[in-house]
Image (cartoon, rainbow, N blue to C red; front, side, top):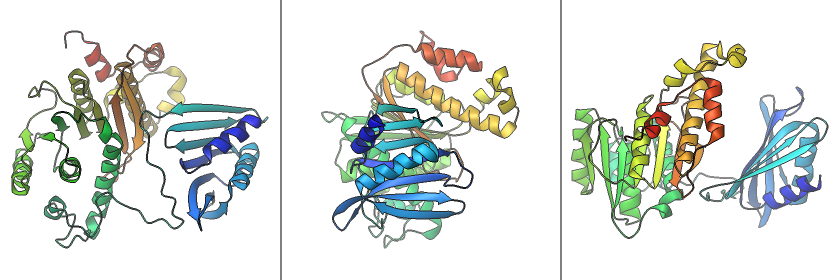
Length: 382
């Protein structure tokens, strides 16, 4: 128990983003508890939100009381605690016999601290009330800077995306022009947001190319870029797999590229040696067709479960393949504009360690899968 106390003591600080107790042991008790730091009357407290049935019960606790309460929950009510801090993630597992297992994983990118206000009002990078030309023209804002009610989800998505970019901004080169390629940019809400954030707000020397197959959409976006005077933002009609217009790209963005189109975009990013990759995959069919494992057949025989498992496995294996290529990878929750469950963002930053993973190979063999990204990067002719 000493290790658990020491762990909680080290984690319950203003660097805690959120903690979650899960794997409930009792049907009549709380099913889940979330804990976050709050600043109340100058004191750092920890607010617990316990979900019991359809009700949620809140309590603000001082640090020692919070440690005691979390320990009690772990010993009696829950089997798992995950603490998400700015620089690391800590997982605590407890057995019914009281055995405690603690694992810690450092984050490749330090996250921003949580908002400690007691009654939080979400602060956005692009604030409501300040008109942004491209948001006005794209119908997200009124000319006065008010968010159009039906577009509020898009406004939140744009800001969430910029939070991911803000975390990696310091990773981009500062001594030369930075080239960014957005595969499958579509209507380009996020492409314009990326240019506005990096170039207009922060003055970085960047060049962004948006690529999509829809000619009319590309023409419209290119005209908007010229109207705003965004001289280093260009839109081209083209296909991800066959694009060869650049020799070096510093950052690759691929949002909602369907099925293996995501893999072709990731492969190109790796070949270019891109410093940063941001990818939100879309429909994923390849592994759904491939996955075969008799032990898992009682689970995989249900079509919906098979589809969701295959999608999650696809992104986890993509992350593993990128790690083999020397990237430090995080899989993060993203707010999806189309309200679908596909709201995972893969964020990868190029590091120095590179090498094959026997565990990754064994996992693929166990599941009977051969992902496109793995095949593309193993092709020595590329």
